[in-house]
Image (cartoon, rainbow, N blue to C red; front, side, top):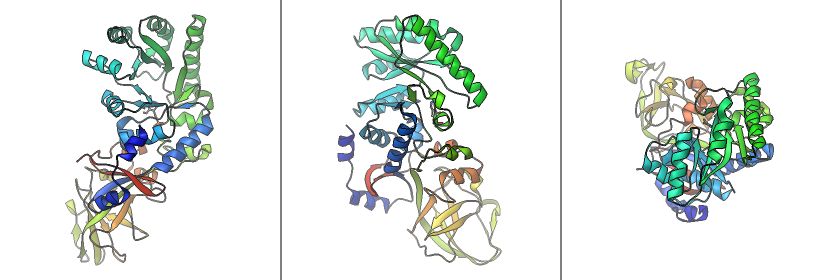
Length: 394
Ligand SMILES: Cc1ncc(COP(=O)(O)O)c(C=O)c1O
C-alpha cells in the first residue's frame, strides 16, 4: 500500500513548483525518520510501535504511516478513532492501536469493521466490543491499559488480572497486549514496572499469555532498558527530538526530521526610533531593513517568541522583531540578500534555531511546539533530498 501512496503523489517538479507559491510550509525529511527508527530498533531489539497520534506529532498522519509501513513497521498507535479510521481507509496493512474511548454503537461497529485494535480497561467496553465482533463474525484485537501508578486511565493494577481474565473469556476478542505508562520518575517507575510484571505473572499462573507487554515511550527508550519488554512506543524520538537536555547523553543518535520554512512576503526600511508591530514591541535602534513573513501564531509560532526568534536567511541567523501576530512575523534582513519570495528557515533541522532551541526560547516544551503546528500548513516530504509527497489540506 505504501508504494501505491507514493506512486500517486505529484512529481518532484510539480511539488517544487507548488512550494514557490507557499508563504509557509513544513519540510519533512523521511530519511531522518528512517534513521531514527533504525537506531531505536537496534537499541531496543523489540517491536517498535511508532506513535503517530496528533497528526503524527504535526508531521502529517498519512504520509508518515505510508513511510513507516515501507520500513516494515507492523504497529502504529493513535489517540483518536478518526486517525485510526483514516489509516485503515487508506488500506494500510499495519496494525493500528487506538487509545480513544468509544461512546456510540457506530464507533464500536467501525472499530470491528476496520480491524482496528482497541484499548480497553473496563468490562463494559470489552463486553460491548465482544458483542459487536460476534455480530460481525470477526475477531477484534485488544490491548488492556493497566494503571500502574500514573492514575490517569486504565484498570488499576490491583484488579487488572481479574479483569483481563474475564475479558480473555469473551467471545471474538483477542487480548494481544497489556500496556501502561511510566510517570518518568526513576524510583516510581521501578515500582510501576514491577506492578505490570506482577499482573503478567498472575495472568500466566491463570493460563493466560499475552503477546505484548509495553511500558516505554521515548523517555524509557533513552533511559530505562528494563522497561522495553516486548514493545516500545516512541513518539518524540522517532521524529528526532530529544525532549530533555540529558536525552542526547543516552547514546541514542537522532536526526530531527521537520523544518519550518517561509518566504518573505514584503520588504521595507524603517528609520531609527520607529516602532514596529503591536504595542510598539520593537523600536529600531538604527535604520533597518525589515522582512515580513506571512505566518504567525495561527500557524506555529509561539507568541512568546516576540523579539526572540532566530530565522535563517542567506546563511545567516537574523532576529525576529516585535510581537508575533496571528498571521505575521517580522524579521531583520539588514545586510543580507533577501527579497519578496526569498526562502527562510524559521525552524531548522539543527543549530541554534532547531526545534529544541526554538521551544526553549519560547519557554515551551518541544511536545507543545510540535503539537501546535497548524494542520492546514502544507507539508512536503523528502527522500534522498527529493520531494516525494505533498500534503495539502486546503
Ligand atoms: C500511551 C503513550 N505511549 C507513548 C507515547 C509517546 O511518548 P513520547 O513522545 O514521549 O515518546 C505517548 C505520548 O504521549 C502516549 O500517550
